[in-house]
Length: 274
Image 1 (cartoon, helix red, strand yellow):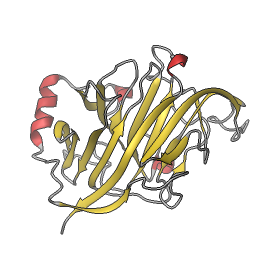
Image 2 (spheres, rainbow, N blue to C red):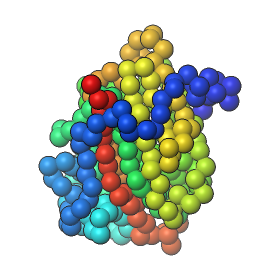
Image 3 (tube, helix red, strand yellow):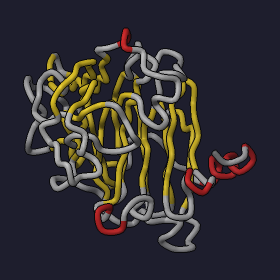
């Protein structure tokens, strides 16, 4: 995190608004169907992916990702399961079994966007060890790797810090590995019992983050180049529920809190009207 004074500068730099009046809807999923997530819009991350997390991400498994009653439900379970994506030569999937399962949806290879308003209505799960997130990576992640591809965390939450919503923007110059992360938090005491609206507004000049139309973090394009601002290229979306891991698991995992549900009412992507 940046010092408070610098955050105040960032927060005041962009006069962006959460109003939809200047935005045109270009893509959405209202989850107004039943069954697996729409395969024309979503793919799955599979196996063990990142951050030394404990969960095995499963694909096309209703127990972990399903749509019902107008909601996308990403559900984590305590269950020992053989890793169907096991590969002894894979750094990520060399584990043969997992003790937890969950889901992670991605638009990679299907849909990506440069700039826009990204809006979600969601309710995060309860429980120490849960780690839900909605975020983006640059489409070029495989080629240039993280953090050079850029990452935008629109909603991040860890169960051992109830009521605290995080937003972060990562690049080569600004990331937690070198102690220069750009981000902020806001308090939403009932985030795990009530649905709230989470918004990113992303323009060539910068980004602003909102909860229920209240801006709590902004950052800007300082014009110094791609190391600082790799955000003028397409990004794809990820929505997941991790268990444990390098951050989410720092206070352990409360198995009694499982199964845990990350519930999403809708996803709406807008671009500025011309």
